[in-house]
Length: 447
Ligand code: DLL
Image 1 (cartoon, rainbow, N blue to C red):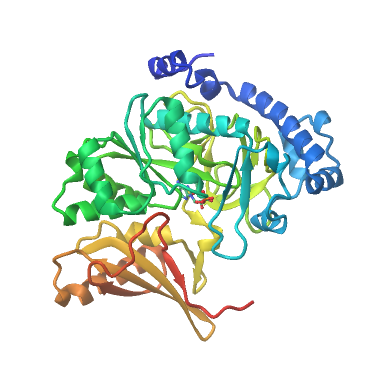
Image 2: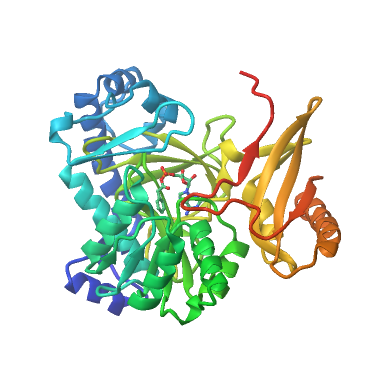
């Protein structure tokens, strides 16, 4: 089994005992065989230790040890966020709380938070996958990592931290917020790597610029950006303003946290780590598999999680996957940039729109700043979309009307929806400290 390209990189990592080049480059047959064996173990763990899972596995007629193909898993119903909430806090855990090493939880903007647990072994594997992701993105042992993901119940901070430590990188555990101080620390400490949400990276760039500080001179080389949808236009904006290579990293707490998938140098999708997860793409309406290569909702099954085995978890994230070996040598499938969550999809006069599509049109447009919010209202039975976007500093108010008219035109011609656009003074849109709030939904609640 050969790694076509980058053999030296893989070899160096392997020599340090940090990564397993075989695991990332194994053939499809080897990968499938490993997945099947791990799926049997996962089903057995879930069945033995989670009564709710046992009932579902038995009802689907699945015998974990007798499983002969990965496709048999399709007999099992999906798991949703609601299932986690219904078993709040620990009802889906396959280990007693006393046997866990850590608990994380989602912020839970609606209702109860979703709570996830990890054994010491889970944390070890998670750190390994984040280390693998960082390495895949170009981070090397010894690189100083400025970690501006929030520490706490959110998986971003500690997840990135443990992965960087595992790779042999010193970490500045700065967390989110206090942007002036962060800019000063970056200029003084000269980290090579910035971990943050893309919207917070942009907020840092803005604060630096307002202080007359040029982050392009900071020595930053790589940004590990994720936790929220971001467009290619946003990537260009961040790269130009901070002077680094912006890498997309994906993950979700229900499955693990950051490091479920990560881009390599090819920029042709994010490698989803198939030795630890089984990925499906389904039609969100029918629940049936999407056609090969077609867009749909990503569904993930964990293959090595002890504390919280997840079977066919509906992520709500809309994407496409590409199979086949990547030019980097890795064989794991590629998840194409996550355009958005089905929950965030707006239907404006029958047209489906994701916030990131609007972002792709707005960001980089002369006269407009990359700070925006989408406001949804209802008039009669029709949903209306108002886009509030800031003017670039220095643009006179007399041009706001003309900028808005241009944006309306481009949104209509590129996305096909009629939206109202309001151009605002610089600084009017709230800045991100973590995940940006892109949509304000002012429609009357129906339930
Ligand atoms: O956001 C984990 C994470 C932390 C990923 C740091 C990357 C970096 P949650 O808070 O559970 O976990 O949110 C998960 O965020 O289902 C996606 O909708 C979205 N998301 C995460 N990464 C990306 C990305 C973390 N790279 C939810 N692109 C997911 C687009 C992303 N959306």
